[in-house]
Length: 333
Image 1 (cartoon, rainbow, N blue to C red):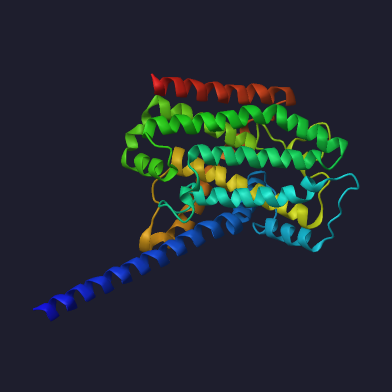
Image 2: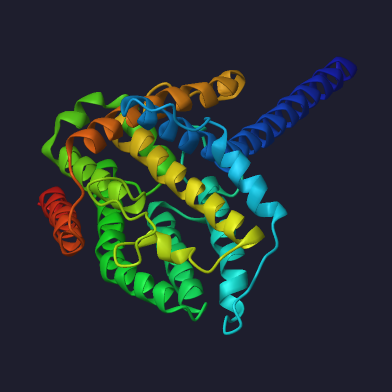
């Protein structure tokens, strides 16, 4: 009897060890899929959007792989640092890239279950990391010593405080709805309670976050890209960069757009059809399909609305901030 009992305990221990090992391997794979998607698929998302935009405008348009070609081209070129530039001009680009990689562990951008390092921050922590990345980017641009870069950074600062405040307020309000500030739990809550999408609270939050997404990604009606010195905002950040540093900045921009868009899709608009476990390999094609849906919405906006004048951008962001504050007040009451 004792030998049979010992053998049973040994088999149970072996099964537990095997299941634990399999779970650890699966968690590593899910983590790698999430990070690889954010880093390497984000340029593809940008390329697909630009190609679709050209098709809508009846143009041939660039290849969907054009962002990769641009990145490789910049990496091969020589990096020229302005004479008056400080250390933030050089190392700020790498810091921003590293912060965005860290954010990809925190929020459900591909996998609906927590991955490694997810517990390092919550919704509020993710919003603060986005703000920190923007702050370092502005400081690096100012550190270049260029008048045009400083002018663009000053304009960005005058707008960003409203955008970042809206971002933080919206995440606070979502935490009030779901009673948690864990983004993965929030995603599960919204999947299990689809009628929450019909509430006024969720509508306010979604509209406010979508307006911030338009601003942060430089889409019409608050388009901030361009080569005109008197009109550019985001373009001023890269004005003095070249070579590998320019490639890192461009890559960080693709990643930021993907992260914000994924939060918009997986938390506010369409949190369903995210898989974990053995079906986790379906998450990447599903996310691309979700992004195609978001691209259609963005294309409709860009082809039907005109660009706002520079002094109207603050009104646009003030409206988003007002919606987020109203949403927060209603959720508390």
